[in-house]
Image 1 (cartoon, one colour):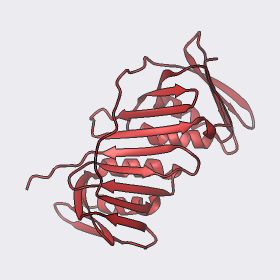
Image 2 (cartoon, one colour):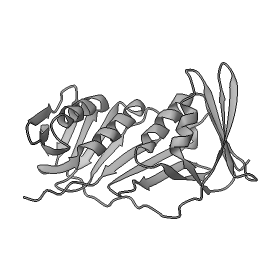
Image 3 (tube, one colour):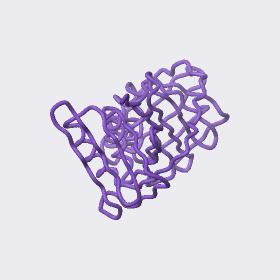
Image 4 (cartoon, one colour):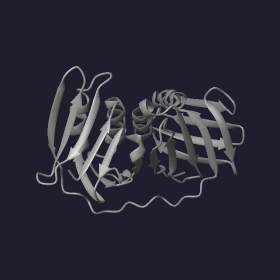
Length: 252
C-alpha cells in the first residue's frame, strides 16, 4: 500500500468531506508523509477551500512518498453517510489497481472499493489580501445571522468598525439589519484597523457556514473593503479549514 490512514471516529471524516463537497466535487488531495492537503476553487472560481490535516489527526497514518489523489467527494460521502456512532474508518490506496479502499468497522464490517480519478495539476495559490478587519465569532451565531439575512435578500453587506459588526441585507420588499457588539455571546473579539465593508453572495456564505458548522464552534472572519473574505473555521484537533469568498462588486 502506498497510502494508509485510520480514524477511530468516522463522523470526523464524514463532516470534513461534507464541508469540502459544497465547493468541489472532484478533489485532488496532496498526500505526503506529513499529512493531507487540499486547496481548490469552485467551478465558478468565486470561492476557494484550503484544507489541511497533519498525520497526527489520524490514529494510524503511513504514506511512502508524496503523491496526488483525486476522488469524487460526493461518491465518497455516499459511503461515509453509512457510518454510525462509534464506527472507525480506514482508507488505503492500492498502487496496483489505483483504487481507494474504504473500510468501515463498527457493529459489523464493510469494505468499499472506489476508483480514483485523474489528478489535476493546477496549483491554486493562496489569495494575497491584506485584511483590515479580524472578528472572532461563534460559528452557530454567524450561521443564524446569515439565515436571518437570507430571508430578505440573496446578498449581504458586512460592515465592521471597532466595537461592532453589522450585516445589512436589502431585498425588493424587505430589509434586515443584524448587529453584533464586541464581547457579546456571538462576537467574541473584534479588531478593525479601519472601518470596512464588502458585499457577498448569501447562497455561498450560507452553504459554507452550514457545512463547516459540524467541524467547528469558532470562526475567525477577516476582510477589507471590497476584498475577498476569509473564514477560518477553528478545529478542535490540529488541522485547517479555511474558505475564501470573492466580493460582489456593487455598481452605484
